[in-house]
Amino acid sequence: MSTSDVVRPSSADAPLTLDERPARSLGLRDSLGLWGNLGVSLLLPVAAVFVVLPGRPLAETLGAVVVGAVIGALLLGIGAAAGAREGVPAMVLLRGLLGRRTSWLPTAFNLVQCVGWATFEIVIIAEAASRVLDAPRWPFVLGAGVLATLMALRPLGVVRVLARYAIWAALAALVYLFVEVLAEPLPELTQGAATSFWTATDIVIALPISWFALAADYTRHVRSPRAAFAGASIGYGVATVVMFTLGVLALAAYGSAGFDVIDALLAVPLGALAVLVLVAVELDEAFANVYSTAVSAQNVVARADRRVLVVVVGAVATLLALSFDIAAYEPFLFLIGAVFVPLVGVFAVVYALTPRGAWDTSDTAPARPAFLLPWAAGFLAYQLTLPTFFSGPGAGWTTWWTARQTDLGIDPANGWSASLISLAVAAVLTALLCLPAVLRRRAAR
Image 1 (tube, rainbow, N blue to C red):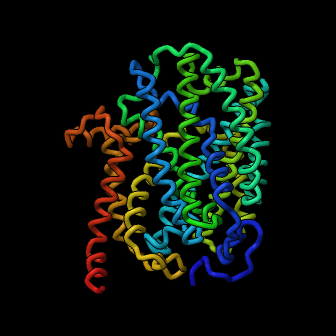
Image 2 (cartoon, rainbow, N blue to C red):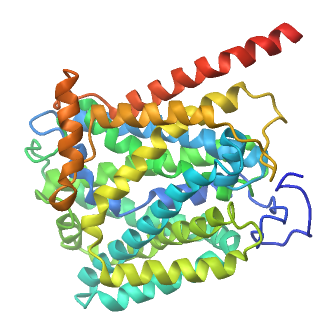
Image 3 (cartoon, rainbow, N blue to C red):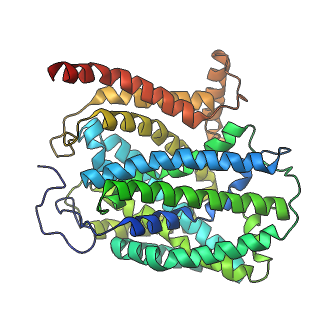
C-alpha cells in the first residue's frame, strides 16, 4: 500500500506520520506565497558578491542572475509538481526512483543538509538582528531557534500566514530598500568573485536546486500539480532575482560585501525597520529546514511522530548555532548541495519517462541501484568542473580534485557551469539506462 493511502483520518494540518493522508488544502496563492517567502532570504544579498563579474557592465551580472534563477526555478518546479501529483514528501518520492531502502542514501545526505542550513539560517537571523538592535547575538539565536521550532509544529498554518500576510510585509520592506539603493550612484563594480558569466549563473542555480530535496514536503498539500509547479517556479524564481539584485545594487552603491551589505542597508533612513522586517521573514527558511529534517527522517522511521522529531531537530540546530563555527561548515553544505544537483537530472528524466500511476512510493518499492550510477557520474562531473572549495583541514579535498583536473587537461579556471554540466551528464546517462524499457513499452502497444 502506498504511503499516500489512507490509514488514519487526515488532519487539518500536516500528518503526524507517513501513515496519514496529507491534507490537500493549499492553492496557487498559498503556494506562491510560501515559495516567495522562502526566496526572500538575507543569505542572497549577503552572497551577492559571488555573482558579481568585476569590471563588466552591471547588466551582465544581472543577466547571470536572471538566467540562473530561471533554470533553477524550473528544476525546482519539477520536484514540486511531482510532490503534488504523488502526495508524498520529497524523500519518500525518491522511493519511486531508487526503491525504499536505497532512498535512505539521499535521505541521509538531506538530513545533514537540512540540519546544517537550519543552523546557518538561525545564525544569519541572529547576526542581522544583533546588528539592527546593537545587542549580543546569543539571545537572538535562542529566540530564532524556539520560534522556528514552534512554526514547524503547525506547518500548514504557518504557510497560510506567510501567503496572506508575511509576503506583503516583505514586499513593502524590499520596495523601500530598492528605492533607497537606486537613489545612490551606481558606479562600475570592481569587487566580485565570479570569473565568468556561467560561474555567476552557477551560484544562482544552486539556491533553487537546494530546495528540490524539500519541495514535495510542502507541495504534497497543494491541490494540483500545476499550482505546485507555478507556485514554486514563479514564487521562488522571482524572489531569487529580487534578492540577488538587491545585493548586487547595494554592492555597487555602497561598496559593501558579505554581512557589510546589511550594515550598508541599515544606514539608509528607516533601513533598520526594513531589515528587521526581513529578519522576521527569514524565520520561514529556518522553520522549513527544521520541518523537512523531521519529515525526511520519517522516510526511515515512518511511524515516528513528526512533532517529537521537530523538537529534537530544533534543539540540535539551536545548540549548533550557539556553539559551532557555521562559517567553517558552509563549504561542506555546498558540497552536500552538489550531491543533489545531478540527482535532479536523474529524477527529472526517470519521472518524465515513467507512465502516470506507476511511480511506486510504497514500503515495498523495489531497489533500483542502476540509477545510482548516473547520479555518481554527475557528481564526479561537478567536482571535475568546479571542485568544492575548502580551506584549512579540508583543503585536501580541493587539492585532490584540482590535480584530477590537471590529469584530464581541464583548466581549473574553465568558467563553465558545474551545475549544468552535472545535470547534463546525469540526464543523458539516465536516458540511456531508460531507453530499453521505453522501447519495450512501445513495442508492447
